[in-house]
Amino acid sequence: MQEFSIIRPTTPEQALALLRGARSELGTPISDLVVTDDHLTKAFANRNRRPEWVWTAARDDRTAGRVAAWGAPANEHPWIVEFFDLGAEPDRVEIMTVLIRQAATDLRAAGLEQVELNLFPPAGWRDDPPPALDDLLAAAKAAGFEILVTRRRFRWTPAAGVPSIREGLRFEPVAGPDDPVLADAYRRTFEGSLDAHTQRSLRTRDAAELAAEELADMMNYAGPVDGWRVAYDAGGALVGLVTGGPGAKAFTGYVGVVPEQRGHGYARELLAWMVRWQAEQGAEKIVGETDDANVPMGKAFEAVGFVQESARVDLVG
Image (tube, rainbow, N blue to C red; front, top):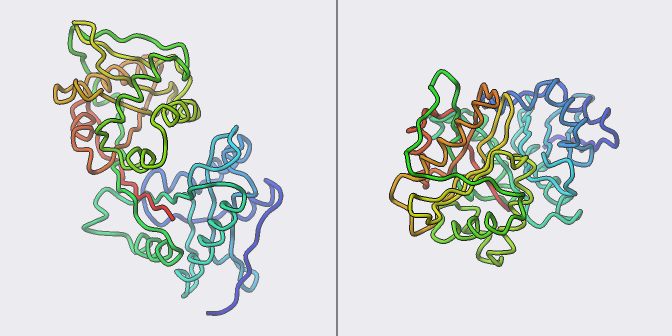
């Protein structure tokens, strides 16, 4: 393989200069969005991206590949590595392998326990995978990563209509991510969860501690808690919880039903409540995700009027 250098920026301005002009090649709304100049500029200004979370390859005065991570402004470490530009070199898979391996090494050295890669291919990626997806998966696996889970990413727009909600359910607001009622409801939804990340975390983590940590972190992508609700049935029994934030482009953070209430269609009702609330706040697009294996949640999205926008492949190493 012809030699190349790994370039690490030290300022946001340098990082922006290195990432501008990148191509995603996956052809989905989110993968195309993250490489735009406007999105990059805002991300660095808001500290969702940082110079120390950027790795680029240079060969003969040209950029030969780019990788970057994304995180919450207040967090020390990024959540995910999800910015990938393979470049146009004939050995681009090998270059990307080196970049991913270096990114993982640097992030672990900085204290990140679990490095996760997220790829956002089209919905039909299994039947017709983009060449770039095959290249990225090959590079990730060569760098020591393996697929943890595949997911579906859904979107709702006002054209789908505002969904109705079943009578008899009561939706109660919460005081904050540390509200004991919310924390207990969230912890209880872990039992029998179909979510691969939850299953993996519970192998080594205490459920109550994990619930508290994840609810606090959820504030960064599904907050504030104005629209978060704990739901009860007509008899006063706990049904579950739903989280999500306001905005023209909103995100449904979490929909969870406690074990004893599953099988009655409550996931659809919780999601419908959140969509109604977000629509009242002016949402023009609402995005939500679920694991491929979580068939009930996928059906709930479809029942409320969501359509699949893209997919997601999560890799860990």
